[in-house]
Image 1 (tube, rainbow, N blue to C red):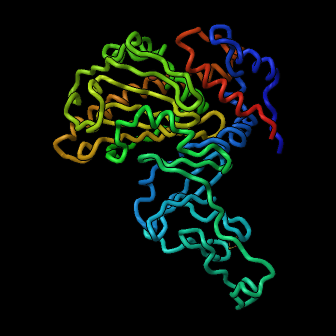
Image 2: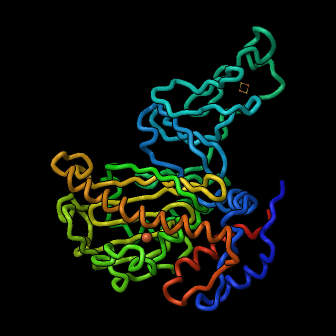
Image 3: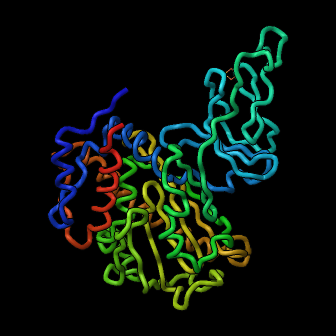
Length: 385
Ligand code: FES
Ligand SMILES: [Fe+2]
C-alpha cells in the first residue's frame, strides 16, 4: 500500500526549514491522518533506534514479552543462557503470531497453528510432519528453514531499544551525546520503583512536543513553576538525539526532598539539576540526582497514544520501606503534572482535527526544541521509500 504525504506538504516543508522565528510547523493532518502514521511507522520508527521496553520485562531465562514497535509485533525474550533477544513475532511457516502474552519460564516458543517450535535463542527446533504425515525430519526438505527473524537491539541502563531496519548508526554512536552528558550517573544502580500507564486521546507527537515545551509551564503548571521556574531553565536543541530543557535550580519543598539516595557519582550541586528531554523519537527522560523517570510513548492509531511511565530510583531508594513515603510523594507529584499535561494535549488534538489550524508559528527562542522535533519528523517521513 502506498501512503501519501498531506496536501501542500512541500509548502509545509519549506516553512519548516526556515529559522525558528519565521518557521511554520507540521500540518494538522500529521496529527490525525492514518496515512501519515503509516509513513511514520515505515520511515521514522522503523529506521531509528526506538525504545521498546525494559530489560526487566524479561527478568529471567525463559521470560517472553510481546511488544509493538513501528506497527510491528515483536517478542522480547531472555534465552536460557540469560541473553536478551528481540525477534519478530511471527512463525516462519505461514506467519502466525507466536506470543500473545508475557510468560515466565518458557522452555520454547511453540506456534499455536501447526506446532513448529523455536528455542528462546530463535533457533528452529521441531517441525512436526514437515516432510509429510509422521515425517518430522527436515533433512529431506529441499531447503533449510530459518529460525525466528532477529531484530537489532541495544540495552542502555534499564531500557531496551530496537532498530527494525538494521541500518541505523551503531547505538553507542547514536546515543553517545546523551550518554556522555549523563556519564556521571551510573544507570546500573537504577531499580524500578513505580510504573504508571496512561491512554491519551491524542497523536503521539503532541505528547513529545508538550514534554519538550517549556513555555507552558507557568500557565499549565503554576505550582510546578514555583520551584521549577521557566526563567531558570535553559533549552537544549543543538542535536538530533535529545531536545528539551535543563535546569540548575530545581527546589521542590515536599516530603521527597533529600530523603532518597542519590547517584554516588553525581556532580556537586546535582540535587538542584534536572534534565528533561525528548529522546527522538518516542522516549521522554527526566533525570534528577536521585531518580530517573522515563515515558515510553507508543502510538495507538493516529489519534491515540499509550504512555508507559517508569520511575527508577538509585539502589535501595527503590525498595527500602522507610523511603516509601518519599517515593510516593515523588510519584504523586509526577501524576498531578501529567494530568495537567493530558488535559492540554487532548484539547490540542481536538483543535488539530476540527479547526482551520495548519502549522502554526514558532517563537524564536522558546519554541526551538519543538521546531527541531518537527523538522526531524518531517525529514524522516519525506524520503523516498
Ligand atoms: S504458521 Fe506456525 S507452524 Fe504453521
Ligand atoms: Fe507540562
